[in-house]
Amino acid sequence: MNKVLFILIFLLAIPCAQAQEAKKVFVTRDANGVMVFSDSPQAGAEEVSLSSRANVMASTDATLPGKKQPVKEPFTVEIAQPEEQATVRDNTGSVYVTGKISPMFERGLRVRLLVDGVAQAEPQSNAVFILRDVERGEHKLQMELFDQNGKLIASSPVTTFYLHRTSVISPN
Image 1 (cartoon, rainbow, N blue to C red):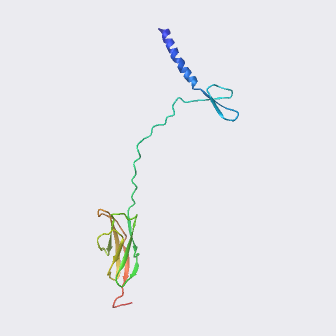
Image 2: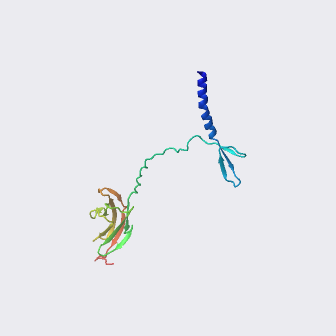
Image 3: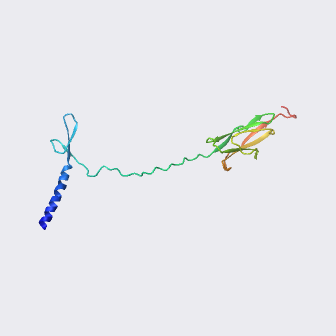
């Protein structure tokens, strides 16, 4: 029984030893400097050690990365015309007010103009206003920006301007 077991172990060990010998690879350079690979040793050959591990890359996550929503820049509103502390000379009392909204004005946004704290009209889809029959003197302007739902999302700083109109009492 022991002899049979010994023979079986011996027979199983021979292919393993041959497999180990088959993994030896030698490299040399020929007269032209080209590398030559061989499984038999030659004079001046170096043995190349081969790893028994297959060249397999680790698996990666196949799910697509989530799309990041771009961070929305908050809206800002400012009054471009008339400038702060500007003097407007118009005998009819007409004042042209222009606003600047950044980032770019989007569909659905509405702008309202306040003159001396009083809304001049319903919010509109552009930032250009024409005021008629404005009294002489100092006036304060402010613009408000509303989103599609009517929520106030930005307001401009208060801009002060002065309207000069000739009068019957003092024409100059």
